[in-house]
Image (cartoon, rainbow, N blue to C red; front, side, top):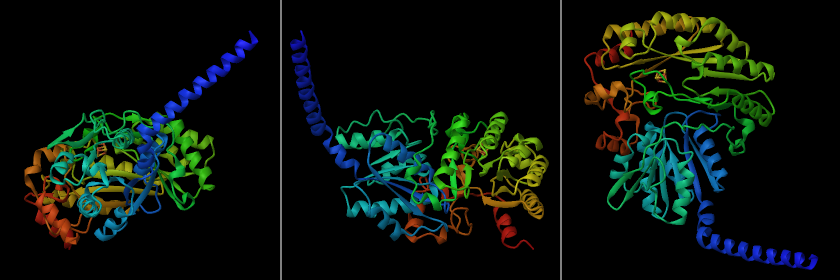
Length: 472
Ligand code: SF4
């Protein structure tokens, strides 16, 4: 029996060895090419915020790493709202065989021009686009710019690794990759679009080993939830998130801050809660503040607020747990405009909450918008006066011209009035004439794709611009 057992063991071992070898040979035959290609993936993002983490590359990188895909991350700095086409091209040229590039709408013309040059020089490179900019106009981009191979619409965390693996095994079957836009013959195919926000936010922290020189990073952008249940008429978030909010366990968020502190080995950073709806759930905000205090982290943090969700006791609790900055979208100094955009609060309520916040929180910012297509000169003056009043009380203020957002209520109602206007400096550039000539040409040629550079035209527009340029 002992002999038989021993013999059986050897046999089993032999069989296993043969099986393992067969599997290894199969994997090499079938997936050897994956291993080769995976080493040549470059994740590319444009970075607007100095000394801050880049959330998109961090989450996408974490997801690729989990799937065993080797990749490099390249971050192109764009701090003064100026993108140099030659530098951008060189940046792309020095990359792997597969480029996964994400951008916002403002950088879309630059990115497309640089990628066109790249494909002319390196036709074998595979280009995947993603991010907020390409998502809304993906079909049009695929029809007009044949050098783009794929566009991932919405969140890329799951589809990107799937796509890279599919490219590597060369099956050409992309039908199961959610949110992917690609070509099949002459047709442009769009796979079922998934929610813009991942239905399942990654519960754990992203892989911070992907952050280069973490010791010198001072702003850590953190997601604790995604989406918004409100319906402001100028905003794209509610549509993209189907008016839902997806929450991450708040204890995991505090653990993430703890991890950052450990990696940094000091408190010299801000945890920036990059959520539209952080203050939506009062109980959850208080739990977050309590945990920070209990852990004695002594970390500074900032978040977005919402006028109708704040009260003095909540602001106090937030301040006592290290909140040093809060940002309010006040949007207008006119109650008529606030009603029209469905903001859900009045100017008076906004003033109360913003000034109350200023009593407890160091840096309070109130943001306003102008050039609403239904705005009168009088309403714009009310905005300027409200803004000036808050500034006189030590509140930081911002004034942004309204940029069109596809799918927003305002866009649906007023998109026929969109015009390319030369003399309006945007929040994202110094005016259309400040862009490279090639970009201007593209923006004029494809208004459907680059609609973001256009403005709603309305009766009081010139008067508002005159007022802005010559306030006296
Ligand atoms: S502007 Fe803010 S509150 Fe309004 S829908 Fe957008 S994210 Fe929500």
